Image (cartoon, rainbow, N blue to C red; front, side, top):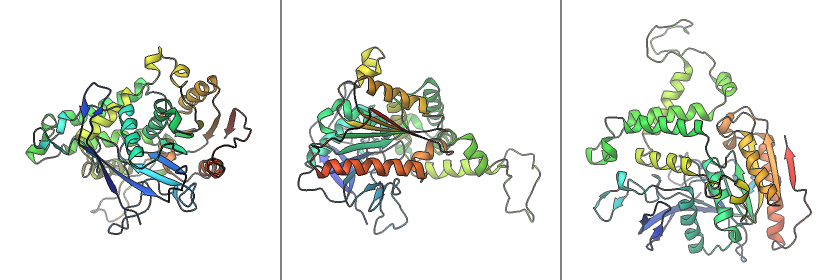
Length: 394
């Protein structure tokens, strides 16, 4: 059983855009116990539509399992009997922390489109303030998958003294043009929905559901591999309620015919029932903007030079949105700086979603890594066993 908590910050947070925000709240959850030395804390950074509820369940909502519950908990790869795990909902989100749905103190109305544009770096600075409030000077590890992996990387360069280990899973040093294109199509679906009202749909008592549904459908297509989609759905036709026998022919309409269409529509409708459209715009733009090498003439090695952590970088062979080649760019840049890197390229059929699933190779690599982190926590981090500069697992 877990319980969310809130932390308010009155001091203004300067944002990369030049704007600032004050009087905001971050919602977070913790799992396990912080040791006396405060040296066993692990920060988990979330991806696009997740949040602070990383693991466990709520007393009043026993079916609402944390989004990375297979990774975090007693006896799991990130063992909460050993580590104090912190899950935080990012600023600008819609699942607890201050965001576009929150009241703008200057107007008394929801922020809506007036909420400042955020970056991955802004999130990390906000997370660092939360760490201060919790009395955590240095994390044993900062970890995340996808967009969460970008945050973990940013931690190592923005706060190098505060991160002992970094776990970056299914991520990239920046989005490709194709990825930015997918995000733009999703955003246009929302922005052109007649119910969007320039982002002020709250005032009209409506939701741009059609745009959100299309955005989510696009996202789901990119999260799955072709093989996974084929194995799960193939070209199977949907059985309709009016059918007395399983159909094997077409209806010749533009309604749902194939099982994959039914699945995508279901995911889109579910997403539009709980996720905020303005938040979706903010988070996808933060994804687009992440490019630590930009300020260094495109030299990723120079961008990652401040990092002092030891790294675990994990990719999945069928992840075409955050392909293994992008993880290898990170590995090569870290090795150029003499950092110690363990790289696991996992042969998994599930595409980008593999980082949330129970692939045995993946889970074994994560468990072994955190065993090592725990050993270092136990000896105060002084003992650093001799490791090769790069390890591979396939």
